[in-house]
Each structure stands twice: as structure tokens, then as C-alpha cells.
Length: 305
Image 1: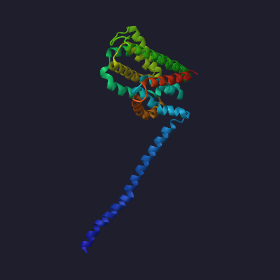
Image 2 (image 1 turned 180 degrees about the vertical axis):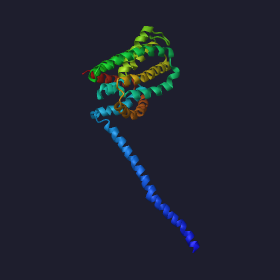
Image 3 (image 1 turned 90 degrees about the vertical axis):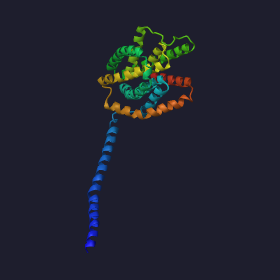
Image 4 (image 1 turned 90 degrees about the horizontal axis):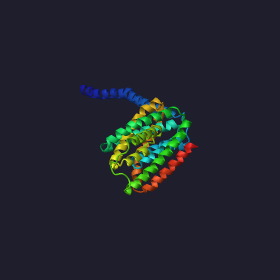
């Protein structure tokens, strides 16, 4: 009798424990899971509702989603192609939003690039360029502050066409240098000319993320070899991109909606870099450059209309 009672106690304890688990623990766990799912759904709905005031055609959303790939291509294979992304973003979005939404992408690319090439940077050239670029950033700030979105679009269109002209000068100088007619490595450039190039690059990157052709042309004129060229260029835009953060904040350009739009662009950044590596071995560089230049010119002219 006593043995039967002793054996029934564990069974009774297990029964009570099972009732507690089924009656309290499981419902509590289920309610916690449901609450977490509700929070996720609410966050997703709030994220989607944040775009309610932004009405874009299907091609506008396509440009936003794929613009990260364009920046990835620019960072990995073809630096000058970044101005095409600027032109397309300004076509798809209000001008200020299009320019500001690119900044997080540019920051990510700048951090990756400067980490790789910093040790090759010509610090003397960098110091002069950055100091003069501050004047250009100031000019870009005043233009952005005193123009509306509609007024800004043709201004950016003209700026992009000027950048294309600088690219043509850049390519001409490369050909001359390849033929032995350009300056040797380490060739000095007049300080006044350095200041002019720095100011123009600062204004171009501040207004439209489009200073790369100017810096490339200047560094070729200065005769920098490939690695110092890349190091100085990436370091310059690393500094400029971070200086643009307070500038855009003071202009009210980096709003919550802009950052959410920018968040949509980031997933395509790495695939864009992979695509650039794939294209580099399959598409002739000259053909690709001409294609980008033609598309950029068409987009810039569209901004003027």
C-alpha cells in the first residue's frame, strides 16, 4: 500500500507540473511571440507609411532601388560613373532628396575605399585640396540654401555637363601621358590652380556628389602614380562626405524620410560591386565608359528641360 502511494506521487507531481506548463507557461510564451510579431508588423507598416507622401512612378522606385548598384560600380570599377547615379536620382526624386539620399551610400563606399588606399595618400596634396574645397562647399551650401527643388534641377544638370567636360579633359590628358607628353610623376601644379580645382571639386561634391572628374583631372595634371592617385582621391572624398553631414543637416536635407529612402538603396550596393568585377573582364572599358557618358549626358539634358 505504501509502495503504491510512493509510486503515485511522481505521477501526481508530473500531472501538476504539466498542468502548470500548459496553463501558464505555454500561454505566456505564445503571448510573447504574438506581441513580438505585432511589433514587427507595426514597424513594417510604419516604415511603409513613411513613404505615403512620396509619390513616384514605377521607374522612379526602380532607380531608387538600383542606385546602390550604380554607386557600387563607381567605387569598384568606374569612378566617373557616379555622376550618372546623381542625374538619375535627381530625375526620380525631388532634387534635394535625390542628392541627400546618396550620401549614406557614398559614406559606405568612402570608408571601404579609404581603408584600402590610405597608406598611399599624398598628404601634402590632400591638405591643400581639402582646405580649398571648404570654399567650394560654402558656395554649394549657399546655392542649395537659396534655390528650390525645381530651380536646383537645371543647376545640377549644368554641373553634370561640366563634369562630363572635365572627364573628356581627363581622358585627353591620359592619352597624352600615355604617349609621353604629360608631366612626370610628382610634377608640381601652381598653388593657385590647386586652389581652383579644390574649390570646384568641393562645390561639385557638395551640390551634386559630382566632384570626382575634377579631382581626377587635377591628380593627373599633378602626375601622381596609380596608387597615390587612388589614395589621395579616396581620402579627399572620405573627408568631403563626412563634412557634408552637418551641411545637409543644417539645410534640412537629411530628414527621416530621406534616410529611409537611402536605406532602400543600400541592399544593391554590394551586388553592384560584384557586377562591376564581372563586367571588368568581359566588357571593353572604352565601350563601357562611352555608354555611361552618353547616358549621363542624356539624363543631364533631361534635367535642363
